[in-house]
Structure formats: structure tokens, C-alpha cells
Amino acid sequence: AGTLQFGEAHASGKMPVQGIEGYRIYLADDCGEQVGPTLGYVTRSEKLYSCCAATAYSLPLGPLELPPLAVALRIAINTSSAGELPYGAAVLYSDRTETEVMSTLKPITNSCPVRRDWWLLALVLLSLMN
Image 1: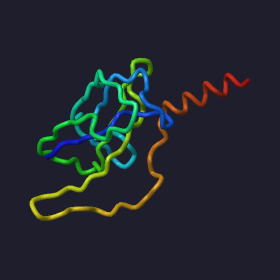
Image 2: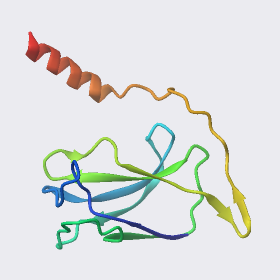
Image 3: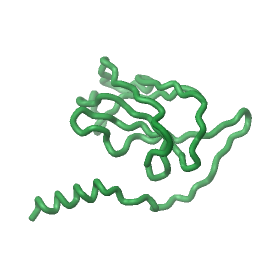
């Protein structure tokens, strides 16, 4: 339980980014895929930030039962032109109960499946080059 606070999205360090409608927050596995339900959606503020306000947005979180594969909170950006971007910023967390800190070491692997939508993009680009 607590409050997740985060700042405005930026592109290559430039702010504000046009076309952002909001942010969807969910738990993700080590491949960035959603596990469990969406935790919340935060609509973009009418105020456009020109610099790094790390607390521009917030989402109150109640007690959560964490799915076994969850390793991070993910903040996905929803845009007006492209919909939800395939990946968002990951926020690692520690699962705490009263006075005990629980953590599990996980090996770093390249076991994430290749996303099919990227293969489609690669095929389109290859066909355009010919």
C-alpha cells in the first residue's frame, strides 16, 4: 500500500510531449508483460510540464496481493495517435510485510519471447527496402 508518484513523459529529454492521453499502471514480469489486473489509469494533466516534476502524477495503491511472477510496476504511456506504447517505464519494488523485507534474487537471462508486433514491423521495413 502507498502512493506511486511519477513525472511527465519525455522524448529524448524534450518536454512536453504532444499526444499523450494518460498512463496505465500494472504489475509486470521480468519480460515486461502484464501479470494481474490493471492497478489504475492516470489521465494526463491539463498542465503541461516543461521540466522534470517527479511528482506530477500519483496513483494511490491499496494493499496488493502480488502475483508470483510480478517483479515491477510498469507505467505504460497511452497516446492519441498510436494507442498504448508497447513498453513503459519499470519501477522495481520491495515486497515488505510489517518488519520483514522479502526479496528474491533472479538471474539475468534473455528468456523473454520476441514480441510478434516487432517482427511485423521488421517485415514491413524489409518489404519497403526491396
